[in-house]
Image (tube, rainbow, N blue to C red; front, top):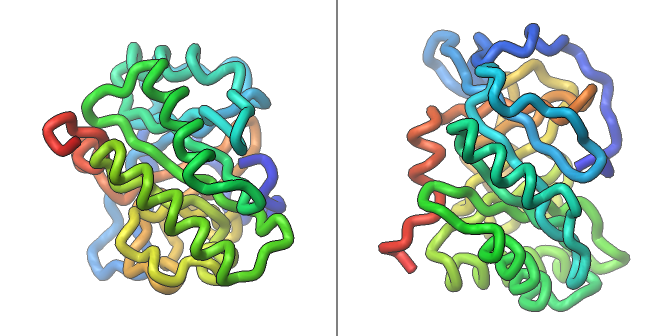
Amino acid sequence: MKRIAKLLVTSAIAGGAMFQLAAPSNAAEPPKPLPQGVDVSTYDRGVDWGGGRLGFGIAKATEGTGHDDETFAANWAKIRQSGLVRGAYHYGHPKNDPVREADHFLSVVNSAGLQPGDLLMLDLESTDGRSDQQVNEWAKRWLEHVQQKTGVKPFFYSSWSFAQEHGEGLGAYPLWVAHYGKAPGRVTAPSPWKEWTIHQYASTDHDHNVSRLSADQLRGLGYNPAQR
């Protein structure tokens, strides 16, 4: 996540409250409280998962075909112990085989314990010199393979512009979009998505996010053993 170019932050983090009063700019309803969340990797230390300020937490699990994030297991356990919705993400490299990368990710998450309601995510920020079409096909294959293996429809994460450029045919997957030029929840979804699910709006001490869905709705997008 730290690799996305840091855009100008136009809004301050609202005191670390569990909910932020904001509403998506493409929604007609009045402002409503949005659950707050933090995503972390080995670069992040000292997150207070149990402080009552968060609704969800997301931890980096793997990258490429062989790298495991050294803080994943601890973060994964602490997020669950704190009663938060939790997600695990994989940082993808289109230069590699997408199935090998997906299997690497799943092996690490399964070893740490995949529980009902857990979210799975693909973080794609780099082309590795591949064409737009190759990157798009790579993402499709990774997402399809993870869904086939787990029954979970994974999230697709990237910057707003990268998602629009490489997201053709991915609109059915939940979107986690990074856009630091917009206030929390005040972002429209890039094409082909009709709406976003999580908005990463700032990267200060940690990466900060809001969800347009409630905690229970987020869990409904997660792992369900009956669907395997």
